[in-house]
Image 1 (spheres, rainbow, N blue to C red):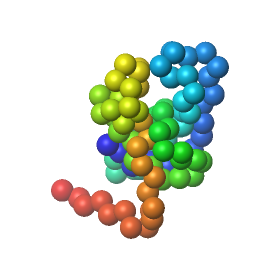
Image 2 (tube, rainbow, N blue to C red):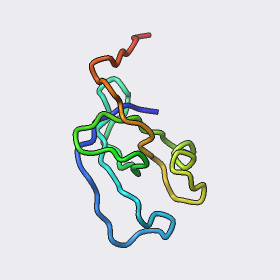
Image 3 (cartoon, one colour):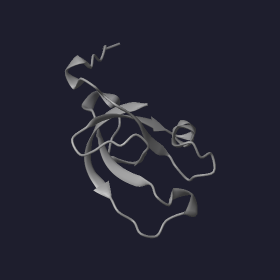
Length: 91
């Protein structure tokens, strides 16, 4: 799971039938999340531009999306209430 900031949206009128009605967001991972690039994630919680969000990746994303047959690799599963209270502990 990563933490990132929503920086945009993706609109696609033609998509897999399991994704019809879904909203797609572009998420910029926080610097310390060890992610090299932005992610397109299905939004399952109603996040918007500039929100700080939790993104589940891989097979966990399909569970967060609640459709195990959907071709989903990233899913927004939470909105951070207070970004000022995020603490990243260095190993």
